[in-house]
Length: 179
Image (cartoon, rainbow, N blue to C red; front, side, top):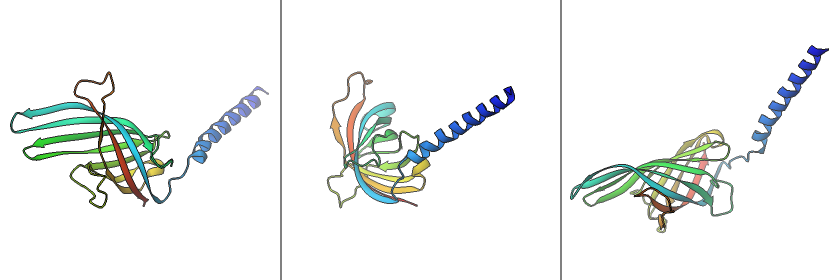
């Protein structure tokens, strides 16, 4: 009798675990195969290290962290955690920032992109700060590609941030496709 009860209990627990695991997959909204949307990332940039040769040039590695907010009321790219690594270069007349970012949603799925502040989409003059190139993702975003021209809007740095930190809101106009 005791072994029958233990077997029944194990079966019930295992069934419950499968149902709980499966319900998350059923509740996750599928990513449209293609689309466009607008979102903003509320970034705080933290300088990590730099090389500064006065009168010649400066390079600074930075990390940027912040939440995303979809400006069109869509779920795509909304309420994600953005984290970027970048290098900021100032040398003579050259001044640019290049890097890469991950956007992670509540399920742990990720969209990965690179960006270049010299890559401007002249058909969108308001997006005058650079372009992200979406090169892939994980989970529901596996196979995603796209482009995201963006603008940069300086904001006050939140209190308590380390010296040298700065805040920027970065609105994006995103076009994506799943391959």
